[in-house]
Image 1 (cartoon, rainbow, N blue to C red):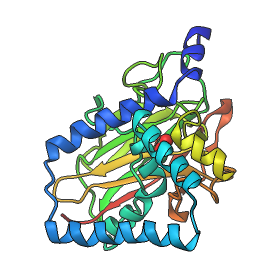
Image 2 (cartoon, helix red, strand yellow):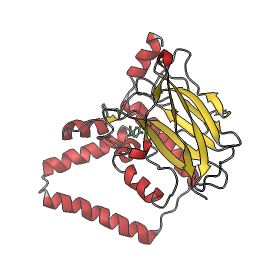
Image 3 (cartoon, protein in one colour):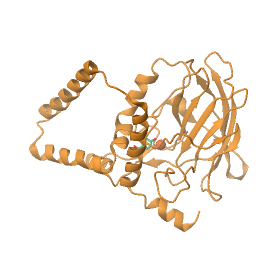
Length: 286
Ligand code: DHB
Ligand code: FE
């Protein structure tokens, strides 16, 4: 990798990635046109407001603390970090609700950096990457089946992940648009084989409002290295998930609380510094 692109990537600013995440999210939800039910909004909003007031009363929160909180909430908006904040500290619970009844593969959070319509490739392909992409080459392969075991013909595997420095294309400067993002169409038996690189552990941006909270509360900003996936097929439910790597220091204390034991890969090391790992996906019926 050239010094220029290293320089560009590592000077990434929270506000830039935050605003890109906010923009993408708003565009997608506008299209989805979700309308909230009044009775349910009343119930949930009432409970949320009560929970805030309970904490303020029980902790005897002062005006100074209230004002710090208010300023921080305002900064969350100007930094564009609401998607980051919510995906780190709340999405894992929403995901549990959403996938509670599934029999197939475990899901986990989507996170703020999904971009739909990544370039499509056949079942056995290499993801888009720079010619000198740093990191351990990884052959990631497997089969997509239905809960009963039948192969899911031409299943769609969307894969996106950070590079060896922990940065995502379209959310950090200096990276090609679709770097380490792709859509793979499995063969007639649901088999796929993707060549990529192993991502690095990822630190959520620390120079914005989320980082301010982490520093102020004495927390850490790390997520274990992970592959993001959306797997789907005709007549089946889509699953959004992530896969992690055995031995990662942050498996037990992921800031986003999104690790599950079923989602940890143990790649085989091959000659020449390469690695390979199989993971089979099981989809629930639609
Ligand atoms: C965040 C980033 C991720 O890559 C992820 O998977 C979850 C959350 C974040 O910065 O909020
Ligand atoms: Fe991520």
